[in-house]
Length: 163
Image 1 (cartoon, rainbow, N blue to C red):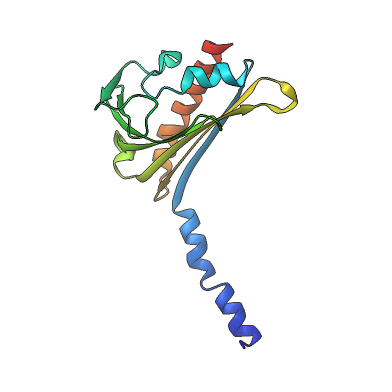
Image 2 (image 1 turned 45 degrees about the vertical axis):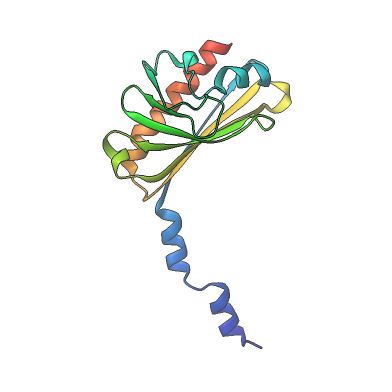
């Protein structure tokens, strides 16, 4: 049996290191409500290779490889700079995730960058809530400052295109 002090140390092995680990993850969160049914929004954004709804932000999509835009492993290059790979897609939950494998500026320093998009009914039947999150190792404010406004603009384009 452990004494109270030993048990406490086992439960909180190194709180400073645990907090440091949390601080070293960078992340963004963006969301928007679109006055359209979930199915319409999902149908518009579910193809990893089709960003026609984002024409004010995405000027070019180069498809890399043979995977279909609905298949895990599909790859694309956005605006000649963001090299991305589809990591998961869940048609029932209306979610997908992707990695940024290579990108400009501060993204060169970010590792394990994963973006996630979730589409679900907004509260009180008010259309569709779209949540776009991302996370990466090694918190870097420059990565946030690059990515956050891009995601906000993408969501605004999505809203404008689908309402």
